[in-house]
Length: 447
Image (cartoon, rainbow, N blue to C red; front, side, top):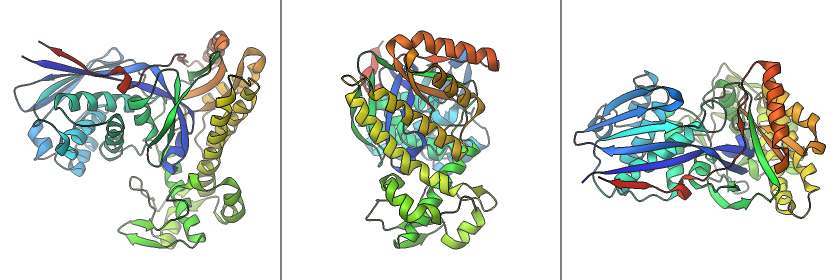
């Protein structure tokens, strides 16, 4: 008898928090009604065979299981080199990273020895639009592989392992919010996640009569892009400089720095905006060359990015963003809890979204398309049931999140139509929430 295992995982809409996740911020995330499906069929040989039928096309690659377990691909460094040399398709890095994280890095959790399998993948989560197609792919594949090997993982364990895979195999320096939302999100609820590193504080129901919409700008987004990586690195440079200004003890550890931080526990988001403004902000450079930073400070605490000596980094704004974004998210969450009984709270919530959007732009992570969509939402205004909008995820294009009433969907669609007519870009709309991987469960079919 053969059993197949099918797991499904959704994309997500970043309502508030975004790039502040790697600095420990509170984030609010909505699982979307688009998902990736991974079906695992056991094989009798020692091969991992992967077939993708995403986006109307078909792609395929195979690797030897023993190469992954004990051979030429048995370390993260060897596997990453395999990816860099384009020995697997671009999307395949997320799949093989998830397989490695499950079968090698967490082998002690397997209930049976690793064996060959075929993995068939389909998806309606659009890639490059800032709704976390990579996390959906990783989480669905990891969950199917884990189920087939009787592995002992909680949904949060799955998310943590998949973030590791994306950071160290795919080479994308993402935070944790995408994977946790895909694994643990609930339909029509905002996941309240404090990224220190992954504390789920609850699932907040969206009040009746209100919705969060997404409109894709048609500008491709990728967290592996230089802009996102530059801003992330600059934030960790800022944290290192803040720690020095505060007199915290630091130790060099190879090309990394380890800081004893009893105050903020290593997270910029734990600094209050008032403390940041009064003690640190004006002592941080607006821009700093990587070589000058390394000469003065030795390195950063981040394990997945490096300071490039010849690159200029926007240190002050990249450091200020997570400090103030965390405060914005905290306030947004307070207002959301009141929204069902105090609809006037939507106006302030909208202004918080606009402020978040402006801060992304000040970091260098805006785009003309997302700016135009936000302007169109602001122009439509509360009289059409639209209260706020912001760029999402890693920025530099992708999708805009919108706060509106349930009755405002027609106006959202009109904004998308107008934007498409102006820009010549298709503007996909995300109007419905969906279930997370844990809610969807694992389908097992014996034959």
